[in-house]
Image: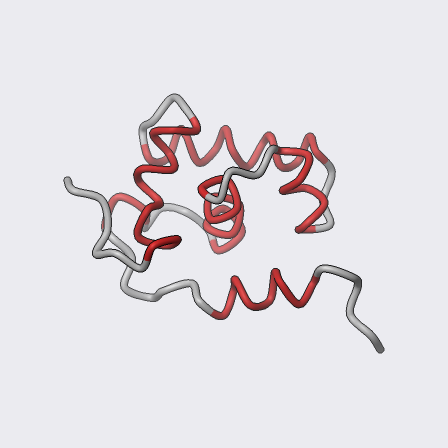
Amino acid sequence: MALPVGSSAVLADLMTLRDDIPPVLEPLTLREREVLRLLAKGLSNRSIAGDLFISPRTAESHVQHIYAKIDVSSRAAATESAGWMVMGGSGPQT
């Protein structure tokens, strides 16, 4: 069976999710880390939904859960916390 269009990019992103995550991001589920990675790349909720084959409302819900779990209130703050996933850095300073 062939994978849906765009799924190879999502799978590639999954392959690069690191196991040595900073403590501040440990409460996130794998799906929330996927969403956070896409959010950090600048994707809108609608684009995140399309990439992950979920509804925009579900993507929005994941974003809100991420905010609550890592104690931020904006995409910019969440992106700063996720910088290690996108840039391969050592994690947010805590």
